[in-house]
Amino acid sequence: MATKDDVIETLKEIIDPELFIDIWTLGLIYGVEVEEGKVDVKMTFTSMACPAGPQLVEEVRTKTSELEGVEDVNVEVVFTPPWQPSDELKAMLGI
Image (cartoon, rainbow, N blue to C red; front, top):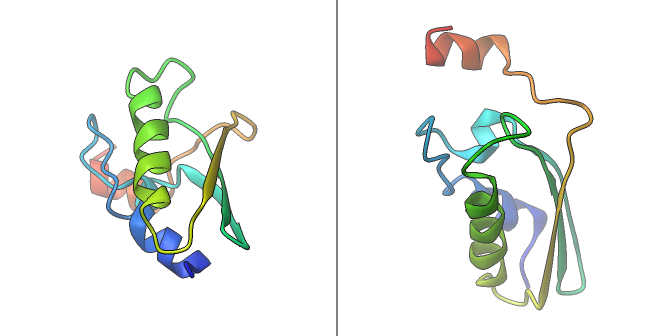
């Protein structure tokens, strides 16, 4: 049975195609809940008009559903609060 830590490790493998950093490190994941084969992921994008948004959502769904015991994956995209890169991430990105 997949755990929250298993899901997080999977999310760390999903790379934003524009910034080339995983979505967990980018801070795009606002929440992960795992309960009896169901995984709920709350995430955002770097901007509301993120061209890679649909691709990222599908990749989260696909890769998470491959974990042992996962029967259902719900990905909720939210824009509140808006994404803000951390100071550490700004340094990584050179901004």
